[in-house]
Length: 306
Ligand code: NDP
Image 1 (spheres, rainbow, N blue to C red):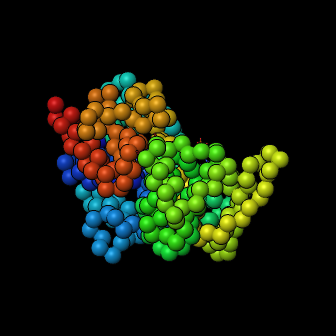
Image 2 (image 1 turned 135 degrees about the vertical axis):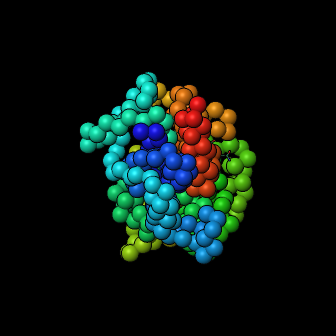
Image 3 (image 1 turned 45 degrees about the vertical axis):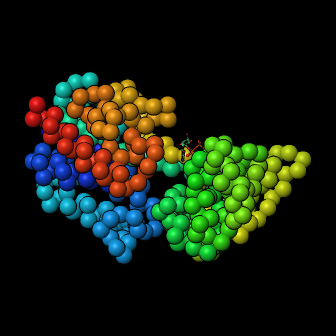
């Protein structure tokens, strides 16, 4: 095989469109969440070409069909093991299949971290989101909460304050971890109320999120359960790139993002490329991932010609 693509988000599908048009006969492994992280959002309104917005399912299906039209083959399955020390590179799926390919494009994305409380799962798509830029618009003039005290949480809270009536920040420590400038933006914003030393117990409401039960100073003499009324609950406690599988072969930064060379998707292994959120700690946008997928396919083509 010439080109194996791991992942079915915007990076993977775009790599497949370019690789199949270049006659590389790519095979794309769709992974555990077909369509990628975007599938957990409500509507995509930022991707160019969709003036009325588009349902994530529709957009990802469009990309998939576009790749299929040029001959991409799709495989269900989850990659369990890789060996990038040899040529061709080896990739094993959870069903035992061994695939061998001259080039591999890693587009495995990242996963937003969740708190792990049961109601988070229950309300996914009904008031729980891990992306303010994707879903904030649906909470115009409403009240929302953002969990986390880092730069992402401050950025999301500030963004949401531009749209919403009120934003609570639920911060487990007595201070924010974010950079000084981000903290000041939050603390000086009259629409944002920071609830320090609070943790979330559960979300309430029917059929959508209408409130959250929080606990203040858990485990201390002042411990107290408090209730806030909210329409949306945004997680901003960090992302984890899905790259553990590649740890033995690909250079990664301390957070696990695959290191690429300059603005190319080249990794430290010749013939292996990383595109999208698995290699992008900064932007985490579908359009940026799609662009990286395009570059990865073009690099793969160049490598195969050489
Ligand atoms: P961080 O790891 O910096 O912050 C995560 C926040 O979530 C912390 O406040 C942490 O609390 C809190 N948290 C983690 N787990 C839980 C939990 N289970 N319950 C409650 N709270 C929890 O992640 P970010 O995504 O904010 O940032 C990642 C990196 O990206 C950082 O280096 C950041 O500086 C950078 N970044 C920079 C931006 C910019 O410069 N504009 C924008 C966005 C990100 P605690 O403090 O108690 O651990």
